[in-house]
Picture 1 (spheres, rainbow, N blue to C red):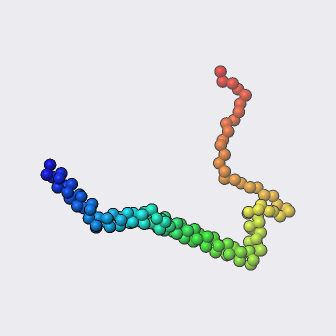
Picture 2 (cartoon, one colour; picture 1 turned 90 degrees about the vertical axis):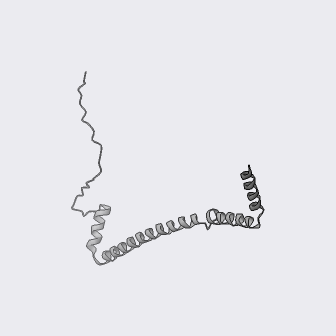
Picture 3 (cartoon, rainbow, N blue to C red; picture 1 turned 120 degrees about the vertical axis):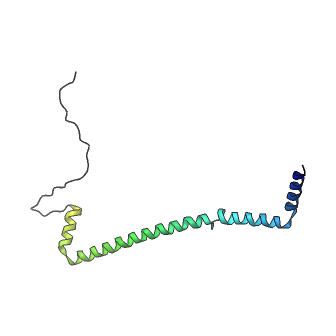
Length: 119
């Protein structure tokens, strides 16, 4: 019983302390700013991930741009390159040739139909 009374007295002394109020306010402030605010640690982490993602995307587009610029230079220098692109991408042909397009698409094999019935 003495233990409970001493715990109660200690708790009341801590709750009435001036420093307890400041400690509670500081803890609540850190929780609000650190986790619930727009500039919280969580949003900082998400923004860092987004920056990395956008950097990778920027690098990809820069590489695509450089490849396309090289291709444009090649097209301006070499008319055979323009003819190659016209044939490959747009299936254009000369008047005296035929084009056969082969596809790698996998199609489902249909079984042969027979007129016989299984009884």
